[in-house]
Every structure is written in structure tokens, then in C-alpha cells.
Amino acid sequence: MGQTAYEAQRKQMVRTQIKARGISHSTTLTAMLNVPRHQFVPEQQKPLAYSDRPLPIGKGQTISQPYIVAYMTQALKPKRTDRVLEIGTGSGYQAAVLSEIVDTVYTMEIVKELAFDSDKRLKQLGYNNILVRHGDGYNGWPEKAPFDAIMVTAGAETIPQPLLDQLKIGGRMIIPVGPHNSVRQLVSIIKKKDRLIKKNVMPVRFVPFTRDKNQKKD
Ligand code: SAH
Image 1 (cartoon, rainbow, N blue to C red):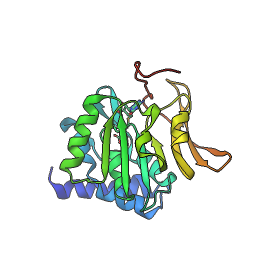
Image 2: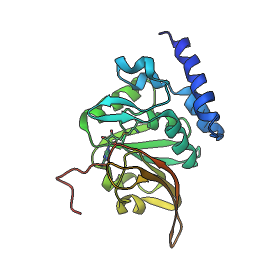
Image 3: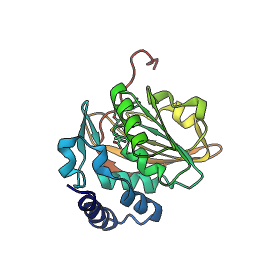
């Protein structure tokens, strides 16, 4: 399929799956129109790249449904000057969408091969404001903290304390939380000086947040 055919599919995806379901944040919509989703899926999945569903990306992982990517991006309230941490690089697609909007994206992936492949893919596509790191995102990326916003794209059983610690005062976090093998809640968090404001925003299904056994202390 040619580039123009993919572009037409992408426009249709934004119109029918994203705008039609109430996403209105303009930089999110522009980013979803710009990022070539078909470049983030395995060859055999390319014909389905713009369909209304998550897709397998290998290693038992998935690239999220376009609507969920757009929803989480809008919910994070990303701004031009933000430095954002993403946990769960996967294909690198969500990082690419965020990078179209913000200053810098720091993204961590626990599966080494996915981290390596996504780093290579993002560089080849010309995304030069994304840093990919292989590692257990439970501990965040302390050397680059604090962050204006943090997005977790794997389903966690609890909210990792190190991530809350690495959020600026006034910073935002979005994370799917709940028991494994069941529907979780997408939780939106704002860190105030002396408290967290938490809101459940919608039920979601996500692949599990896993832990590196060597690092797991709790
Ligand atoms: N954002 C991705 C999709 C995420 S799928 C995209 O746009 O394609 C969830 C990813 O989180 C998987 O690749 C999984 O390996 C990764 N993951 C799970 N637990 C993790 C952890 N503790 N630290 C970092 N990455 C993790």
C-alpha cells in the first residue's frame, strides 16, 4: 500500500474513531494525523494498522487501540514545554504521538528487544526528542526527574511510589490500575503540594506491568 493510501486511512481513523468519540484537544488530533502508525506494527499487521483495535507487536505485547492512545494523550494535558516520562515503550507509537506535542519524551521498556527496536525505529523516522531506555519502569528515571507528566501504558496493580516521587508539583499522571487479568481503571492523578487528586476516568484493558526480578524489592 502506498503512502497516500495510508494517509487516507489515517484521516479516516481520526475522523471516525477519535473525533467522533469526543476527543477535541487540537494538538492531540494533529499528532494522531501526523504519526505513521503503520510504521510501528509488524509487516503482516500493516493492513490493519488503522483499524479500531490493539494489535500484536511480538513478545506477547500490543500497540494500544488508536482511541486509547488519543484518550490518554488528551487526558495528560500535554504542553509544548513539557518533559514527559512514559513507562511501556512497546512499539514506540505512543511516545511518537507525545513527542509531536511536548519538548522531550523519556520512555522506558522492560523487554530489551522491544526497547532496542523502538529506539531504532524512532531514530529512523526522525524523532529526535525521544530517549528510549531499557529497564524496569517501576523505579522511573531518577536522573531525568522531575517530570511535568508521566504516562504508564501497562496495567499496574498499584501506583508505583517512585513515579509519584518523580512528578513535579502540579504534574499529571495517567495510569491503568487494577488486578491482573481483569478490567482496570484508567486513573488520572494531579500532584498537589500536600496531596494527590485521583480520578477514575474509564475502564480499560492493558497488558500487565511486569517487574524485573533482580530489581524487585517490594
Ligand atoms: N505504549 C506502547 C504500548 C504499550 S504495551 C505503544 O505505543 O506501542 C505495554 C508495554 O509495557 C509492553 O511493551 C511491556 O513490555 C511494557 N512493560 C511492562 N512492564 C514494564 C515495566 N515495569 N517497565 C517498563 N516497561 C514495561
